[in-house]
Length: 251
Image 1 (cartoon, rainbow, N blue to C red):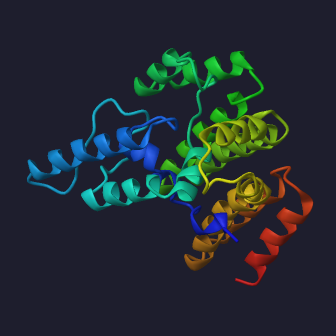
Image 2: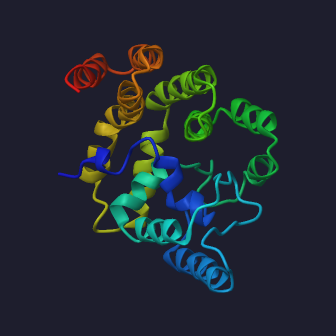
């Protein structure tokens, strides 16, 4: 059985292959290889292990090291792990036509309000809620990695969880399942896709479980309570919430 939690943690957006290689989730294997080779060439010409890519959707700070790009490349060359990275990255509203160029330009230029407004207004019942969930969650975890004020992290996390909750009742799961069928990859059977989505709520809450556990290690009880409240108020399935909280109590 594939355990999605083995690939999802508080650093999911800092490890995401599509984010690091600046690729859309529809990128072919050839494009993945080409992108990595460009980074590899840049590394060989550089005096530092820190490699900065220009005009990426959401640049990672500090800049990733070459081994981070190597790991990202490996993730995208593993069909099942790649699918998890797809779930935790932005999707186009149309898998055939290139319709969302303006949205990606907003993101590259850090026009975040315009990016949010684009997906709020689109409401296509496929990816709008999902993309807003990804935006807010990636931002919140970037804040977390940068040791920003906890209230700022919590505020963005609340918005992310709200959009994840809406995603579960939108058409995103069917949209993703339909895409996988068309890929016709023997490693991505329908049973695998069903398995991933059945574990998705648990995996998302495990991110906040990680944050709460780290706060316990630092003896920061105020933050622990804030992260527990995020889990309890997520609106996810009651059993998933209960199991997540119980895991924290036995930590």
